[in-house]
Image (spheres, rainbow, N blue to C red):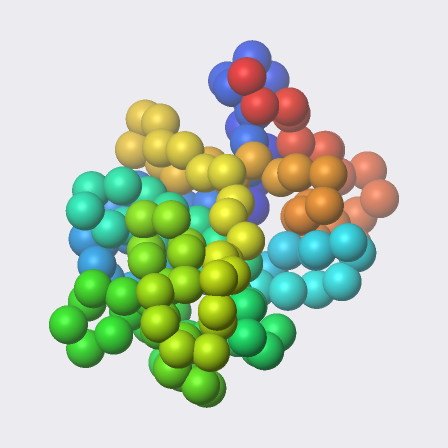
Length: 141
């Protein structure tokens, strides 16, 4: 991930927009939630880019059944590969299974100029490079 140049709107560049196809394989990357490593994913559903932590609400385990594959066979629901909990891609809300009234943890993402950017929050931060002088991301607009 590369920070945007100063004055370009902030955020960390994840990938090119074309790398995330409609209802296709998600873009997966590593983040830190409260300082602990966890994976995150971004997918495109009904033309909208959505991103969540890769953790089922029922059991804090990664959900993809193959790397980057989160959608069910009909490509309608985000499906946990472990217990079958299903989530609405547009909202992350539990739609069925053992996730109850929970919802996936959303991450702020945006597309600009053919690129996808992620905006870290206070709780969810990028994994820092081994270089202590690596630039920090700018604040969102």
